[in-house]
Length: 169
Picture 1: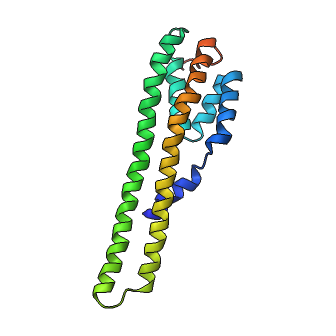
Picture 2: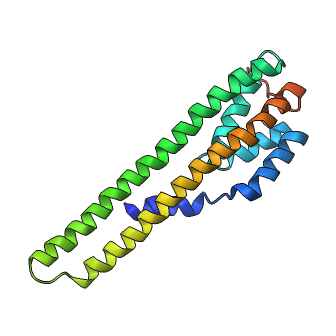
Picture 3: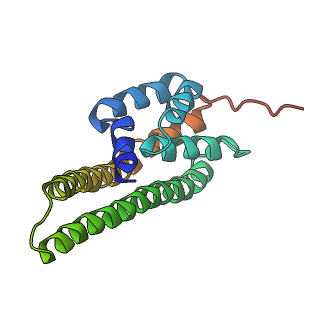
């Protein structure tokens, strides 16, 4: 259970410092490409930016205040949903950590803690720390992207650089 949760952190390893210029450049040149980029990592701040692009594109107006009124709440809601998903994984990993510590306690009460249980508890503790710090990094990226990337999303939509695809009939 813990290994699957920690494995997700290795699969979603976007670094904000490298992806911010990429995303801003895509928003300034081709908004549709920016949306495709955002679909690549829905469990990071890319998911929140992608949701804001999609919601803002559905606005019938190119007025910046209207678009901002749509994208900001959408971004906040999607960002909270992403953080809630990581918090859920973190709480499951806490259960695994508790089970490992409980195994050590049971072994110690019998007079000998098995070395395999101790090794497993150390691995679970390392995995918990990895997941905890990754969640903190995702939260930090979501806050920074709201201040740095969301205004660029609004400008991109107001300037018409994103062509919302027509609905299939």
